[in-house]
Length: 319
Length: 319
Image (cartoon, rainbow over the protein chains, first blue to last red):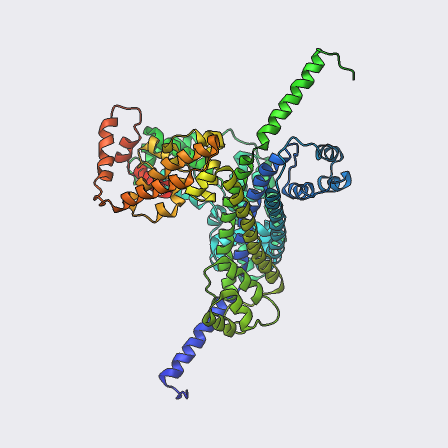
């Protein structure tokens, strides 16, 4: 079809081309791939844990004497012990790396008190154990990619936290632009949306951290100072994010240094006994009596409600 | 160690041996293996669906033109399109079985508007797509075992429902003995425990079916008669279960015949307009005013509570 210059058709073709280019441009950013990868990782990890639990219970029917504390060993043992020939001590030792346990398992492997498998059962169990190992392989390869991509897109944030926490923050925010323009207080609570809205709506305790709870420095700290540590981390992360997105400079080392100093200060400060929490529960109510949210008032006079409120906090409060 | 006859040691050894035999006996029943298999199936199925959703979204970044409606085709396409050489139309057609779609995908495969993958991304996507296919393989092999075992342990129940529903009923009850001694009304509500307790505690609508909702005859029936169909199914299943566990006779055919007749009767009866539900919500409250459960009363005067109640019902009411 010949197209006249300046005609409607030509304009339309140009528009389409430009829209297409715009879409390609939007898709081309690696951040969306990273968001998909971290979500895939988190979901696969859940599946992996479920599979491990199920295999523990299932294989326990056939071999109740086995006690292992990780999914890989369990799956490997299940695969070894379902082979037709009896395994040697060496093969067992290779898997569990514990001479005594290996001896016990080897001894029992001929005369376990568990159920004898029939053929179809064995096939299903073997497939399931192999699935567990496959899930682990996928997790490793997702981890590899997340590490590379996080360090490429979020070098400062990754340096301050780790590649998975950085990627999860990005995934919760939805895009680098949104994440980089967020105030530190929002960064602090990313991933705690549910309990934040519980707090706003029903007056439960406010959350102190979301994704950042996964930082070992936060979750191993004494309960009283966890919130403060999360807070200073969020502040520095928020600066790091701006460097990641706008200036693309690596300022992680300096940030980390002042961050460590502040955390050290918080840790060495004397921990006050906590009357604050109890005050909180009563004081805001007096103030709120005329306000919009009447949830908490009802909460205290209605036992069902109170029950829900506490449970909700325990479940979601610190993710 | 020589053991004197009638001594404490001898007695102890006997006791231990008998306890061991008892455990082996308990483990030897296939029902426990079936319970594990159906739970593994349900969990793996969830993982499979999650993986499918994630792969749709993830691969959509690289190839937004693809629209497929099942996980297997998507994973196969992802694996095909990440190969270094461009795929032929035939290869694509083999996967999606739709000439027109195959042509479009083939045409776009060179010049998609999606993102170009880098090497590490590609590896992660390929692993993830392979996981999806592996999950499907595991599901199939679990299904095979469940079919064999259900027909062996629960022949009548499997005939009336199907192997997965029969196995799930067994899993919810915990053992054949408990399942076989349950009244039909309990069988009807197996799997609806959460909404049953919501009903008892908070006065929400009572559930009408649990696992049995998975029966096509129940979930495709008009809403007004679903409960009644579930009820008659539960009655016949409960008879079938007793035959499965005690007499071990196959009476499935007769049961199915009368069952079909009754369902036919229910289906052909005129459907009453439903004033019942509305009556229900008001009447029991008057009666309960003096009773123990004060939930519903509060529920109606407290808007938060009402909100929770309705949402809870929608989420769990009919699993």
